[in-house]
Image: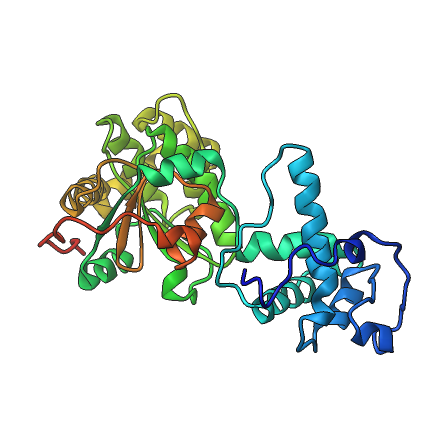
Length: 331
């Protein structure tokens, strides 16, 4: 944050003082920036029309107080906004977060502040940072990225169909890859945050993955619920037999699955997905495309948002390298 526009620690007492002072946000004290809200709604009333730093002093004090307590507890600060965040951006993020989340309206204002920062400027964990620092990032030709995103070889697509391009992810998923299994839960978090996720099964670590992925692809049109079960499952060995067992448990007959595999060319689709993954230059799985960049490796959902949104972590992203593959994904 720019120190000139947002003094982080100057009004610590205001963030931790006794609630109830100058409860009318239209009062002279509110204009001077000393109004102490009791709820998220009162905080919105205080700062929504704020056009000076003075009426943001409560926010500054709350951030400072929380940061001090984190330091005393030897915990990382929950505030990870970088040096280019303006006061107005922080104000708008807090107002939007609280106003769009009813549970925050009557909760303590500090909860709304933390939620706003978590959504807009999420922190990376130590594991995220280690993964990020070793992550390979490669450019993808725009036509190839579009061909992959619109390909019919995904086993699952979820999240809003009208998601913007910056929130569309194509994931190459190997069911026998432990990191892929962990990444599955992160893609669910992303979809709940408005991302559209397209999952393409590959057999990158084991031939047994091909059978599992083929069953998932074949089930897509006859039992979407069964496909979600297969994607979310974390079997010790993800193979054809395991996939068939899960499909039967989901209410799909063996004959229907076998017929779908034969008519959809599911095995060929998995093979093509795997070949495409290799041509893209990915060093492993999970591999995922956002925009025209290919990332290889596991990250948490907040870290994905960081590295793909042009925020702080993305500023330090590895330089693109390599050559885009010549082949388009088969339709």
